Length: 281
Ligand SMILES: [Zn+2]
Image (spheres, rainbow, N blue to C red):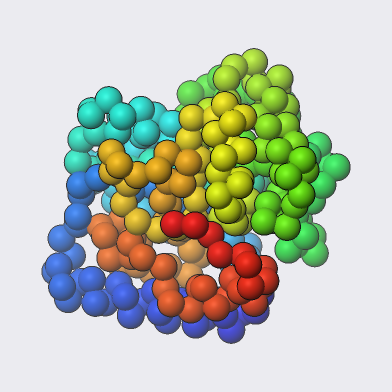
């Protein structure tokens, strides 16, 4: 998609952040579970990249505001046990870019934070690739993934086998993508894989049921909002942090100013993925 779309999105985001600031004077809504997600942490000109400097500032802010930052599975465990304190954030990275280990990991480890990284085994293998890049940035390899998973800061979970649009797939192919990525990742990590991230946040009720049937405990969407005890475990809400976000945007996303999608997103998704490509909330 074009730079014009991202520029427009940034304008919408900024307006919403300003409204949040005026309404709350910057007071964070700290109740419930908000999950933030990123893709890349790099200085590259890439809409999916947040700069290392911005990321450091964002994480330092969470630490300064006494947030507990945990991976997605741990966050949901806390929620289910009724042990979720205010000021808890679930953190995640989609796709498994190498720069997450280079630029995010030291910052996270320094604060004692943990995060989930969702990877697609077929893309890690090189048998599939992300078609939105002309020159894809380097990904973590299997040795990195197995080693990092043991270290305790980053925990790896599944993101389908080849990162397809699940909505376009026949049942048996969708089942293979969803169950196969769990099996393959479990084989590589030697432990149970419990969480699934829908590629590009696109899924329907069929896919939700396939995820539950494959034995996952939870799945994350790209629908923004706050998660509570009653939130569907197979459609957990997450808010993306964008490279164009200002520091105020980050605070507003953290604090409840962006708990619904911008209106233009539905139109964008229809154009990019087709009329049926609407995610369930
Ligand atoms: Zn992805």
